[in-house]
Image (cartoon, rainbow, N blue to C red):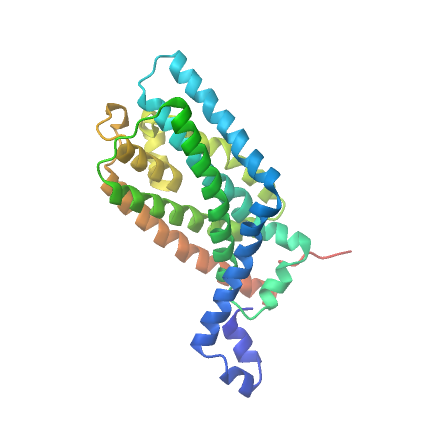
Length: 292
């Protein structure tokens, strides 16, 4: 249960000590405690870092060679490199955010989350921050190595907007991950199949390795629903300013506003879903794994 419920069920003296400052400090400690294992894991398991970087880099390289063999515009190579870097964040959202609470239930940790005097949102924020550090390492290495190896030339005219779009994309992505974490927990075993479904198909409709505008109506639907498609298209337009192959989609300014709206909607939806889960956990006990 969250800090408010804990305060209501505790004794009068204990409840009096749970002021807003203490509640905030307790939730911040929860965020740090949940982010720490993912950040520390980078140093404790170097092999994970190696494979997390090598395998996506091979995938990115294969598309680079395909576009070069087809004599495609040189911007396409840059599109693939940028898409390969951003794929790290989507994989982290799907495997380390969306399915995480379902795995925590199987490991017996979910009951501790609901019983602890903290807001469950702090647990998801900690997951997001830790996963963001992990994914940033992989994405940055793929971007730098591929850029140097394949001679990608960026043409950026609005650095501030590019940085803002990148931050908004991550905020919307991890907000979506928080929503999916709640839904996957309620759907149970179907979470595994949904995780598989949201990986490769999303790569296609998001235009990970090609301009999403080439998908026509399907690309427009992706921009309206998927943060990865919106953010990636906006970053490509800003990183390769003046490229004709990025035409057919909204301007970066409009896509930045779409990302702001997505971030707000996903965070509010995640808050509502977590409150619903807490209510079900206390009232019906439907979220706890039952041993027979």
